[in-house]
Length: 171
Image (cartoon, rainbow, N blue to C red):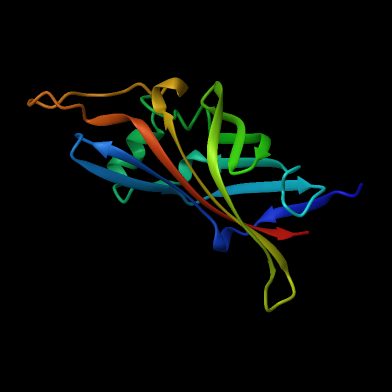
């Protein structure tokens, strides 16, 4: 059985997140730098082994002070843990299961997965597209900093919503 290798197409992929701020609005952010590969023996990706590495220093929430705070030991501690990683353990139907590592903590996560199929672009490259979404609790990964407003509201929600658009190029 032959293995097909795929590499992420960074021009057509993104890793974004949303988190409630003061419990009244959402802050959206993204990671500008990441790499992902997949190896599969079937065109439907049901046998895919997917590996992702995200550069923490590339976090962007459109606020430099907040981004620097997120990189600090209060949150990601980017100087000690420069990458967040994901390694798939299975794709069954519309669920992608894998091990997410943030800082020095690894937990199993399940993401909703929409496989949008495979197509050949105008340049002859074969591409595969996915939409992934899910939710994690940041405190499960040691991201425990928080503050309380004078009105008693929590500044940062524990729940983080993830949205990933991934397009892979057949190698």
